[in-house]
Amino acid sequence: MIRIFEDTFKTISIKIYTAVPYQKAYVMASTMMGRLMKVSSPNYPNKKRFVEALESLYGATVNTSSGVLGNQALFTSSIRMISGNMVNEKHLLKDVLTFAMHNIFEQTFNDETLFEQEKRILLHQYQTLENHKMQYAHIKYKEKILKNHPEQYPLEEQKNDLLRLTLDDVRHFYINHFLHGKRIAFATGPLSDEEKTHLNAFINPYLGEAFNVKHTAIELHESQQDILSLNMEQAIIHLGYHFPVYLGEKDHAAAQLMTMILGTHGDSRLFRIVREEQGLCYMVTAQYDDEKGLLTVITGVDVQSQEQAIDSIKTVVTSMTQTITDKELLDAKQSFIHMITSNLDEQNVYIKRAFRETIYKRPYDLKKRLNEIQSVTKADINRVAQKLSLLLEHRVVGKNHE
Image (tube, rainbow, N blue to C red; front, side, top):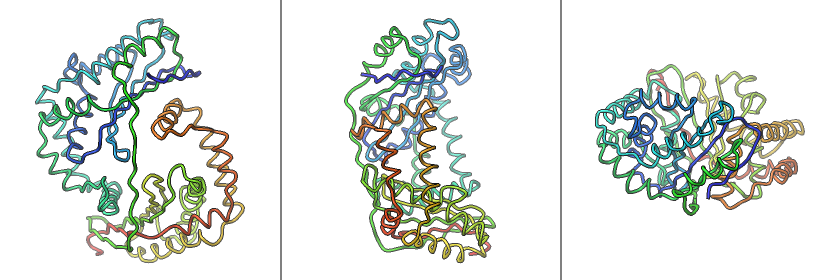
């Protein structure tokens, strides 16, 4: 049954999550499926008519995006609309749901011309990816850091798979995998009892048991280096660290705060020391993946400064195991708590939390979460930082400076 939250927002937000066991062989078909669903439905076979139909529903939006969550290919079908009461349209929810269910669950994918058009657009994005240097560098880093990981999907393989993709492949994935996926749904907004009944009547027939998500951690191995060349005048560097602290574990809050102190904001150590004091880079940040056990430091530098910048970053990372000031910890806690509590003003946060509660079978307790953050000590930060081990030093460097 769809889980419904009442709130004070004026809009209605519905999300239907479909999970299919992840297989690399189906990534391109599922990607194209999502692209086609965003521009057409059987009743509205081209983008112009599709958009006009949504506009007639007071600007409602319906789209399906794809991603990977552990061992599952995850498809998020999002429906967003204003309350019918605001425009004196009692049947608006039913009309939007009729459109959405048709778009999500009754596709035919028979338009070869539209398929070829979307395929050309996607191919062009791949072919021009090197022009988007930071994005390209991050993709190549992930390709390397995920070696031997189930989610590794090299860029060249993606291009070749896209070139071979046919509309039959998309139909096959949609009929044999997407429509048979495991499915859960959530909704939030100013819904009347009658509207809740409509929601259940439209969506419940497509729902089933919740799916289980299993994450594969990054394996610890000896540190490696990888250097690629690109036509540019800078160097983009990724330092990937094994960081075996995972979602739901006792040290999770300490690991999140450690990452914040290290490099997620303008007063972080990396930004303050490497960028402001030493002037060795134009940007530097840290990202923590608590599902794979991975911490990544990303920086953009002048080619001549790359060795100094890398040495400085490594020194700053090591310093996290030794000293943390009271101010650093207090500022990180206040920033983190503010981020969590201010998110309560965002409608989709309620759905995201309910989704995670459902798939991880772990109720979200806001008070407990805030207490966990407040109880983290400087010694906790030092201790979790000692778990960091450098796995990969990845550089994309200007061709004239190799």
